[in-house]
Structures are given as structure tokens and as C-alpha cells.
Image 1 (cartoon, helix red, strand yellow):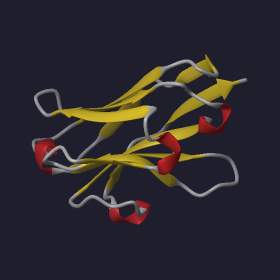
Image 2 (cartoon, helix red, strand yellow; image 1 turned 90 degrees about the vertical axis):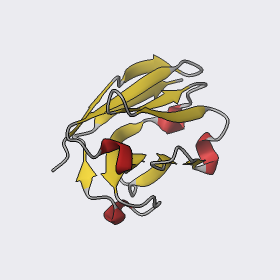
Image 3 (tube, helix red, strand yellow; image 1 turned 60 degrees about the vertical axis):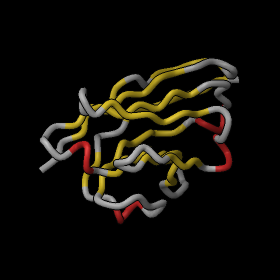
Image 4 (cartoon, rainbow, N blue to C red; image 1 turned 135 degrees about the horizontal axis):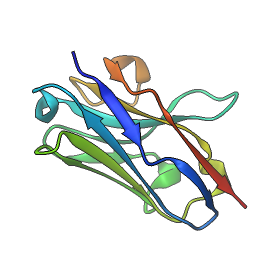
Length: 121
């Protein structure tokens, strides 16, 4: 069983930055693919960024060049650095873990509780 705890959300003005962290329990973190998803009111949950166990990354087109996902296996933690934030980035952000990288939410086995990110114009 893997437990995920997110932190780092908050409110920021457009153009600002936030860094989300997701701390994972268990000994299997280094073997897991990790993803950051977000869900805005009335919208489906979407993959923002993913990172494989080997460190390969992928991003949604809407965040390319602004967001960076990274992982520290020694700390069992995955990060999402968000720069040049826009009002449309406002959503609840979720950390997810699974055995294969995917853009499909149901492919992930473990989820955090979510953290709110609000970007004002």
C-alpha cells in the first residue's frame, strides 16, 4: 500500500509560481510512475505532468515550458514546479502513483487527497 500526501498549494497572482510536493510512503516509490493531475470545477481530471521510474517526463501541452515535474527517490517525493501561472491553471491538483505511466487517471492505483491551487488575474 502506498500513501501520498500533497503539499504546497495556495493562492497566487497570475505570473507567479508555486511548488507542489507529494510525499509517498512505502518502499516501492522508486519503481512507481508518478503523475500530477488536476481537476477544475465541471471538468474532467486531466494529466498535467508525469514521470516514469526512470525519470522520463511528459507534459500536457497547456503547461509545457511552464511546469516541471521531478522526483527525489531518496526522499520518496515528487515535485511539480509551476511557473508563469495563469488563471486557467486554477484547480485541485492530485498526485498519483501507478505501475505504468499513463495519461488515463484510472490507470493509477494510488492517489493523494488533493491540494487547491488558485490563480487570480
